[in-house]
Image (cartoon, rainbow, N blue to C red):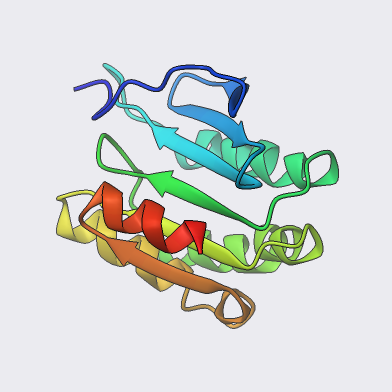
Length: 146
């Protein structure tokens, strides 16, 4: 399944980056990014994942965002321990420098992927962020909006 919902580009939601596995939008009204992971007919490598997350984290130099909403239900790579440590060492500082306070995840139904996401945000630097995990899109959106 490509995506769980259809995202329409509006004045509030601006498409910022379209990648094979990831769509990134900026919601100017709420000052948050919205990320939608997408399934493809092939698997994403760890190097591709790093590239995507690196590109996303650099957007905080251009956009002022207080947080982001991530829908991982369609797809998300399982992050091993090394990838989690890399994320905490190189990516999380960019989130913090960019003013990120809150991150809302709508988790996939795959237990292993869900756990790896949660472990990535249980690393030392990531603990500075308010991160919550949801099964329900509406609850995630309500929380990130506060």
